[in-house]
Length: 442
Image (cartoon, rainbow, N blue to C red; front, side):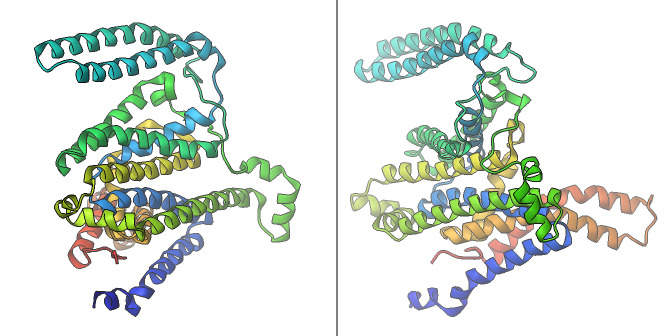
């Protein structure tokens, strides 16, 4: 009975219909505003869709509540700086090896404390020895680390003041961003997954804030709040296109302005890259979803107790899927920083990178990969367009009032709240009238 319902004509045509409507909306922006605006919405929508796929893997497949998406996305951004920027030779000479040695000391202290805790017999003596070990290790770490950091940050602070990166191609930074996020997720999950789900939410929220605080304050790593600009790109630069014979010739043959066309061409190159990544992820995730592993994950999500009774390692599977979901968020973060061409730690806000991604998953349809992609594109479109549309409508409605009218001023000043208000209304309507999302899980 449920099979026939799932494969009814209306549900079969629903996805192509919604994606067609989404394409029409983006094309309409191209005609009404500009093609640059339309492609900006498309590119950021595709990156948001990848973030939504990561959260959907955790929540839709396994029921894991991750409210630290922002932290995993930020780690992906940091990977772009550490992998693709050129190394700062003077800074490495001033304190690079000492910083690495200090970090090794820190890791050694933690590993040593864990080993001591396991080896020593239970009791007060064990607690005292491990505490003494950690305190001694901390002071030793700071004694090596602080002078090294001061030396690095003193090297040309106006333009660098950091170690730089490895100078590798920027596309290598994308999977590395996924690995960074996966590493952080493994540490969180290892400590919090055995606990109740609300503890996991608190742990992810906390780790996200810690990651952002570290990125803002550790200038030696990614320049902190001074930002890293001019990051390498996997696509041509507009200025190079405007000076190249083949591009000018091609644009003249179709009667386009090479200056405007260059930025559209670059955005189209990015869109091609992002689409390739999405299709690769969707293919892998659909195969995983329909495999015995995917069926086991959904069985664990629907009833943990009976899955455990059947001998399934619930915590182990949860750890696996939590790390995979975070890795996808890290990949999206690296892609977004590459598109922006800069790393700005202060721009990572929970509203944009956690709350909005959750709205995308819920509205698109949790448990459905295509739903997550649709939600990512649709919610990002609304996020960008709802304020200009609101301002236009407000101007039309108040056109009969004088420019210095108090009512008109109040309405126009309040337009900044229309974005969060719209997100709240969309969420309320979807949860009330279509709680399983636009493309529900089959």
